[in-house]
Length: 369
Ligand code: SAH
Image (cartoon, rainbow, N blue to C red; front, side, top):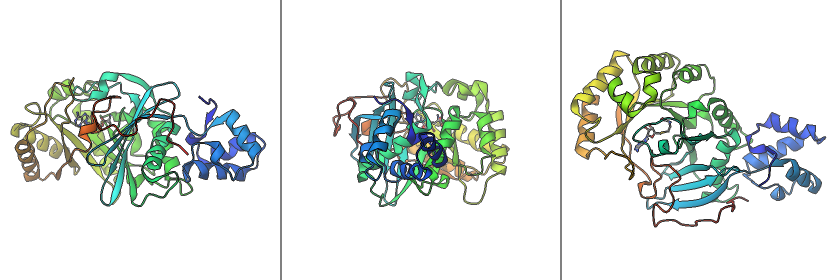
């Protein structure tokens, strides 16, 4: 595996400085940025607009890709899950979800996750490590290249959600850097307004995000209407309980601009958090803080080692109607890619989970240019 600086994680001005240090004119830096981010090339050899000597030099001191695709799973509903490996052999999972008018790519911010949410399979991996900005950007490049062809402009818009493995707010700087790189007009041009980042409730970073000028939309994973239950389901609640979390949300809400979305995610676990009483508690809680935010109900995506079942459809409908009656806009999320373990909470480098594997690749193969 090629070592050296991973150029996919540099913004345009950093790339310019990088080539200048090699004694190469600045415009070559801009050219390389466009080759990586706009033409989505993952190999210097394919950057034929660069002089041969420069390509050879870059190969020695840098890399244009570090992730390798180990397996790709394709769902009945068109969702694709990629299991990739970092240069140090850690799993990274990315999900591509086609929709009629736009595509959504769900990326991971960490390999594994340190939070121990009891309903999430990724938790069972523990934290392996946080991903670099380049590793975050590369996930999107791999998914787009695989779906549409190397460098081909996607026919629909691309939305991103930071809801894959890991806690994005425990990797805040790399996350924001990756989003900045991807927003570039000379690159992928996926602007923050097309991105939603989900946190389990890292309160200080919610407050930090309030001061970020070009920020993504925010989602908060709630999963319970009381501290007692939330402590059990999401142990991070012991560090930042509901009162601190919702106060931070209120602060954040004050900084919302027109068109910005701010949502709560509530995974529906049968007989655990889906009763009528809990719906009322949830509505009262959000109303007590005067939060205008919307609630997304996510049917639990089951997995063998997890001790939960999804709520019945009737329960979800009833829960929703109670929230709505108390003035809370509520949506029910349709699970995607469950059959290939691509749905929320199912990412844990699971292999052979399905007979739908298409294009399983030998380790070390890259789906790149
Ligand atoms: N750590 C971040 C982002 C990853 S989880 C966070 O907690 O927000 C992304 C979403 O998936 C969260 O809203 C989480 O509650 C939800 N989720 C986790 N496990 C799930 C499961 N088994 N079924 C359905 N949703 C799940």
